[in-house]
Image (tube, rainbow, N blue to C red; front, top):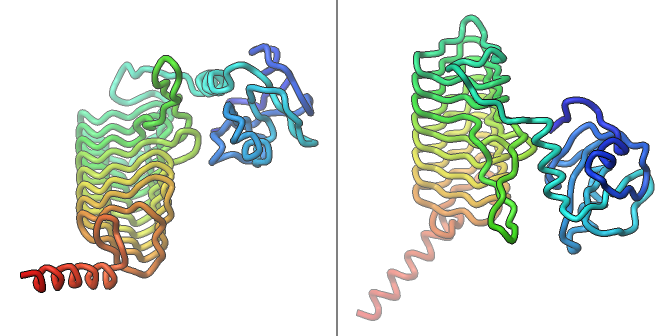
Length: 306
């Protein structure tokens, strides 16, 4: 996510009493988890085994819990609890704002869009022309809805990411600073839920149609013209290509890549990346011809035993 305004490293260090190692003249423009960082970003690391990954990432400003060498052009901000500082910066730039009515004053809704009675439209939402938000649907803060989008009743777009930091006192929820984006001509079936990103965006690209009771985790990206049948669930940060079809109750783990033109048959479980232009089935799922051969072999073994 981007900060509300560019912020100097020195001002951040002063506010949180942080030790500066490296280029103290840098300016922060964004703050992101390590998977999403780009130049100008703040990120954090609090486990030594991830120091190298974080320090060598695209982020220029790294909150860290131990003195260590800093590459030229970057800066380390040393503190006891980098996550706490990171999360506080996110909270200050994306504070929680309670709704006091069904449609926020900060929402921007095209005059041709239809918002049925009982729908909830959160702060800083944008809804494009000819889109329809059915009764009792919720469009959460900072969501972007394109043209000709349909969100059916009881769906929730832009719910908080299911993302927690484990601490000695239990699990601490990250403030979700990302967004949810539905591009043009997307349909979301009744009772579906789409989490916003932790610091980046959850995205459904144009032409994709999603059935009822589907869940997309934080940071998921769905390509163009996909079909997702009822009760599909996709874990956080998984990327799905264009023209994919997932039948009912398909479950897909987090952090995977599903390439273009993949078909996954009903009740399959996906735990690894899938190559494009193929059909998959089973738990764990395999390419369908391989899976059917395996099933036939098992049946043959049972027949011989009888």
